[in-house]
Length: 445
Image (cartoon, rainbow, N blue to C red):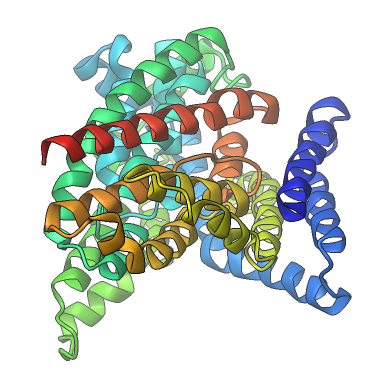
């Protein structure tokens, strides 16, 4: 109970420092992490180790991806390519359907592509679409991240769901089918929610850029096809790697093609290739673009802020993961007679406590697996629904200890207060709706 109280106080510290006192999120997260670690009784040596590990491991996974994504975004924006893409997409889907379009794109892309990477890759397109359509970035960015998050927690072969399916002993194909159906229905609710919140909270997608400046850039813009390549090629490479990895049987020696695809399909290499394609976008090439004062220099300056905040979020999450708070929550809930709701509530509690959806999925599956027979979940459909219930819980709730929260707010220019009001609340709404669908399905099958 003490650990849970400390977690609540830590979250309040972050909100108070960032919202009321306008402290930089990096410092707020660091203060909250150290507060929790010290008062939970961790040794000083352990705290130092976890701070270093949390920052290093988090940025080891996503830091270079952030940098490369920001550089691609800079070339798309400054060359006019992002606005050319937006013009073509708006012509096809109409201004009223931007939220749905971004949600669907995110839903598809996140099946093979890690959600954070997917958001970074698609963010330039979303910002330019929102700007041209005159929409608040709040609604469109959250629609995109909800699309990414839904399949990230519900549909294999993303790491969390496939690991949970393996631990539970569920049929992966059935888990995919159930996850896709529940995910698509949940996405409908997410898009409606995002449209409503977008109309309530207006934040300009790119306040520095006027419509006159956009029109000027459009005169020098590359073709829509050429502009699409820096986004499309990394996605296709990452998807290709996932497909080959999924089809590779255990113990099978990978062929040369598989090894090559494994290399070029890793997010870092895929984005490096995408970055090289983005260098082809300017109508007139100037080496100054790559300098410290040029497009790349400005992009790296912007990226540094995001990287620091993401790393601090990693520190907070790592300290929570190593505090034993997940076990405390599991012990509190595992004795309750909640049926199919137990996996959901258990995973939601662990997700809220430590931030990582993947960790929450795997931890919950490990706790629930021995209880399946006792709970009466014995058929293949029962097991698939249990995995889906765990996945729904892995959405609830995303806040300051989740790297996705900071990538959404910092890349989109959404302030922390609005992030809590819109995205954190939204994860509760959408995740609970997904769990309700699982509950209804358990009566049918």
